[in-house]
Length: 171
Image (cartoon, rainbow, N blue to C red):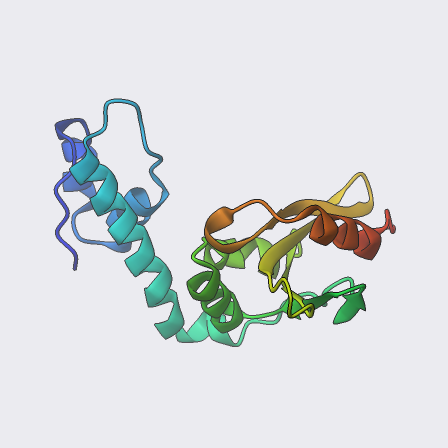
């Protein structure tokens, strides 16, 4: 177990949770708050990253079947959109992109989100991103499209992603 010190306000809840998975989940999903110490924020971040890394070792989820991605691997202009399926693929993407995409596993298994790795083939301006496609009002839409460390995607990548989803009806 990981022994994490937190703000005094959290101590009763964390004591009740002990060193169980509940403790890790509480620490993992807690948001940063105004007035929180830098030390606590860094510890929460570390705990979250350790929890995501631990997902690699969870056998039952590795073989879980996920709904098929609404769009196969597709090139649009200079961008290649490659669907990701399975926790190992999400963990790899998250590590590569320094983002939290691995935490979307349950949404992906439920068919609420579909995640794509996005790469630009133009060697003069290489770019990589992560695309989330969600269903809204019976249509596929872009949930988010972000670059490394959740940086803003270039306009050309956003236009290509919009062409990919194109307002198509969700199954």
